[in-house]
Image 1: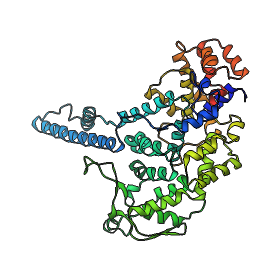
Image 2: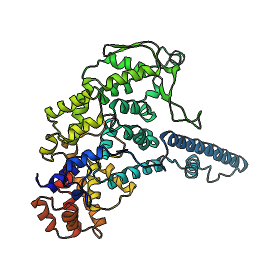
Image 3: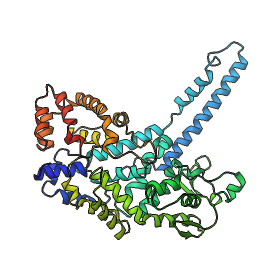
Image 4: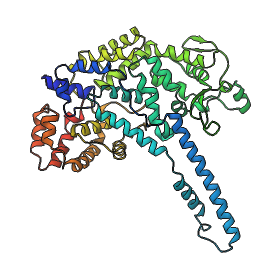
Length: 476
């Protein structure tokens, strides 16, 4: 690891940002650490200019409206076909085997599902922000917190991008308590973790419907979002917290054409009475009972350590240095979860600058770094398809744990990365000079081995592929 000002700037861009792009190394070389801190102090850091994108509730309603119209068309078409069959004894094409499928296909073509296009528009806004950022530190924080509080587009595609914009981005440098309240009350999270189906057994709805509790949201808040797995809570705490969260739901689109998809506290679903969680009694208070529990979880020492460990693992090393984790945990507790101060403590730590770049970039980070270095744009369809091929489809984690963040989880995908690097290199070889990328974009911060390998390549395509597969692009 080099110690020149350019080498330290490259480390800052790789470890904390999204990789160098043209001019970025020179822009921060005089004070890389100060440049990172300055980005944290920028107004609206992490915000996304997306006035053309719908709010999550509006996107949800658009999909629900399209689905309802499609079903109506299917019924109308089916009735017309039935009338035609009754009037014409001879079998028509539509009444032949497969006629119902043909009707459904015609209805789908007449009223397509807008969810996929909403998803792609959200992906494009996110990709464009990553490619345009000077350093990308705030974007990396967004990606970290979005993965920590993950949902899945496989379950609720229409809201996946808006959830990140609405619940995560505004709070990445605020209080953890505010971030926690925002994500746990967002309709996308409530739907993803099945809280919309959770009914207090002794609530009005629970007695009338004989339906019961769903523990998913309560369990994941305790295990993954705050305290950490197998820490200070018990199964009884999970059940009691699940009772507290009953009634946290959102308005259905069918009954609420103007407000469907918006958060709602439904008292008829809420389990009445006080609940004891982690030894503290929370009196009945409707929605405020849940908010009070979240507030205490947000400032719990176990939460501080869990968050500190994940931040250090994400930015610095697969095996987080214990002393650094303790310092960040202390800052978290001393500032009541001020995430800007915790992040600044990370940036100003010696470990963040002295440890070698041993972290393997996750697929999304690697593809972004590759495109930034080459200086090209990105098509959202191709970009998201590439991420999916590499095992990290955008907003589609395999479980509520989110995507893993260690070398062992991604090293087996290097063969697929080589295929992607070759394909991308072939596509851009006519417009991207590997020597320009090495000496001007990366400002000759590559190792001698990488420089020699790229220089000896038989073609531009091969040189670019070697560059994209180099440790300097793969590691951070």
